[in-house]
Image 1 (tube, rainbow, N blue to C red):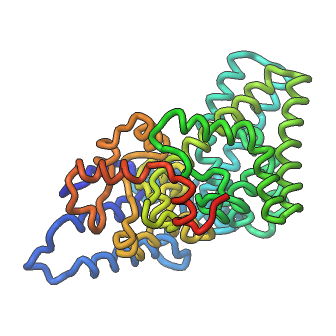
Image 2: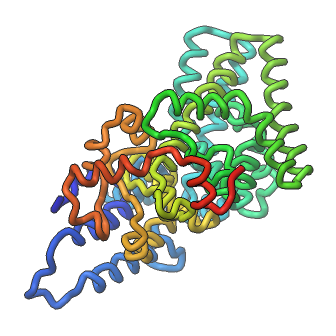
Image 3: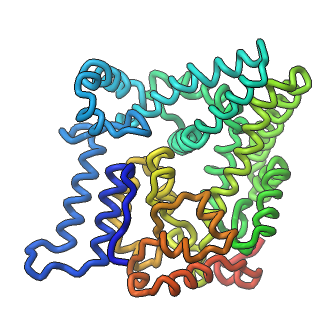
Length: 419
């Protein structure tokens, strides 16, 4: 591999990161006075400037589909008279000045999804129910990763809006398929503590990650038993308060949905039941892809038990969710900081034999695994370190070796314990 075929709608930071990685495949120009290290320093400086609200090159994210720099060029009048005042106001509303996009999406959800759901209960129509569900399905990925930021940072809005910041998820979460507070307790209080280890309820290590039957077992346990398993996990860890809260919120949400379904089934089906059903599948498909490749030598390493994706779906539309290794290395790292953090640690990623892919999202990573299409995954691999010298076939076999189920003795050796 000497070049990378870059998607035209990558974010600017992703484009910079992939260009930098591509240069690692190419020999240095002997006539050049600039080393690759100098180049990476310039890239880091540029990415840092985009995130620094005091820098003249600062650029907040306003929309997921379009970058502000592109809008300035294409629609200068609209940007000057409409977007600029909105951005100035939005920067005072959101917690991080980069995150005007989150205000944009809150406005979107409360002017479309919420009134649509209310009207379905007032006057149901089948076409409206289907249209509402399609709209929710389009929104849910971006919303879920916005809430991912919310649960890690304990909010996304400025302190003066803290009441709304705390309360809005109780309205929007069930409409997007989330049960109240379960994302926080499962993801922050449990998954990031266990980090795909043997006590992680969503751990992939005991499953053969390229077998459909194994994935269905994994999905089924989460789908049907998380309401029971998560409180039991907290009890095993001597955290009875978290057990009570996690179980109470989960069961409380399910009982509320069941009550609404008994009262008025048809709107409940489209506004609450279908979103819950498909989000739970989506969450497990995504987590399977995020943690499918686990190093047999050091499975406890964040570099070797999670992956990095540099693609449009994960990073443009889902708040840099592709930088999953970076997120596990520092769960409190702001989403806009992941590309620059990756470049700063690029050599460490290479030395630790981390896996970086491009032009593929987590869903298609899982689909490719279940089809055993390791050649596609190898073609999407951005080789680093020792991987650069491998043939495509060698990369495919290397990836295959990292999806094997761990036996209990291997778990004990790799993690120093077994459940």
